[in-house]
Image (cartoon, rainbow, N blue to C red; front, side, top):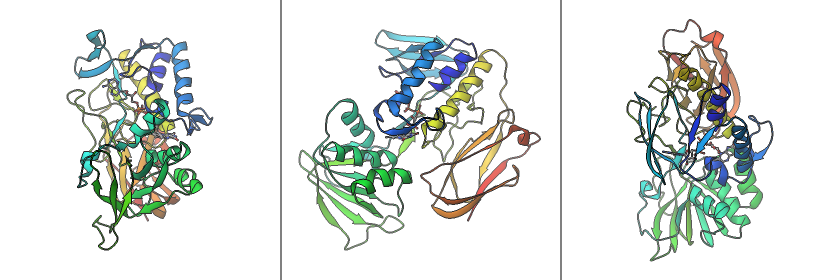
Length: 393
Ligand SMILES: Cc1cc2nc3c(=O)[nH]c(=O)nc-3n(C[C@H](O)[C@H](O)[C@H](O)COP(=O)(O)OP(=O)(O)OC[C@H]3O[C@@H](n4cnc5c(N)ncnc54)[C@H](O)[C@@H]3O)c2cc1C
């Protein structure tokens, strides 16, 4: 929506294709506060944030076609093949912004032995049931994985009258934002079991019990620490995966981010195709997603008008302690907005890049909270070889 809006403000014709009935994506089901502090300088709920963007889109005459699923893109010719209730149609675009978001890691990929009964849900699905469909997934739940969606659902299910036995995390630190650990678990007395996981699932038709175990740093079961918990609902919050599959040829992905490889102008490996949001990397704040969408939309409009050429792109290389890192390439014509996740929690550290001439210290960082900084494009002129970013303890 932010991309559509900024492209439209540049004066080009914009069509937004959305497979759901309503625009807004995951924001529509996030009815808690905590959105928009940077982008709108207001604390909003998810639906409020989406509504504000929708109102602005209406003013700028963005053509929204909902219930339309993009099945394939001919990336060279910019043909977009769309499935809709009225049949298949093709849109010929001049430039395209991909903002397909992320999907949840499914139960099958966790390889937990035991039965496959009803009562196992991903956190996003449970959130949709409770917040949009007014249905409770069960009565007595355990949350597996301490990502933000899991933490928020622990509180949400408690408020709706379910008994939440706890949140289980195999790492020795939580996967979600610190503010969510405090506001969603500690404030409600919900236990967080770090270095623990579920190692067996049992139930005939409906889930009846799970086996909980403490694990070591390599996630091996520690003998003698296992205990059965009687529950009818297991909520999985085991991570999001950028949604990049099968959209079109030649769109490179970043192996660590698992999303589209983009430059700081949000252009993918194919000229005229841009990407922004959770299909590039899983961002923790919608403000970052919207800010990136805004840049993607502006540059897509410039491309559509024939006013910009693809930059060859200077690669950014991950150094020590750097996990997720956006962008993958530097386009010196745009300010460089860097988003990075640490590989492990650190009490203090310094982000260093000799090529960019930065040395930025920080106090306490964790992989769940992105470190973000901006480098003025003036500092990027004259860069020729790869840029390395690392974090030293
Ligand atoms: C539970 C939860 C809590 C959060 N809490 C906060 C918070 O407190 N504060 C905060 O700032 N951020 C929060 N976030 C993060 C923020 O909401 C997201 O990062 C952001 O909304 C993601 O936007 P997106 O556009 O990348 O993806 P999405 O919102 O997933 O949007 C992608 C859209 O693309 C559509 N789509 C996908 N594929 C196709 C296709 N092939 N054809 C047509 N349409 C397609 C989907 O239907 C969807 O509407 C939270 C996220 C979650 C899940």
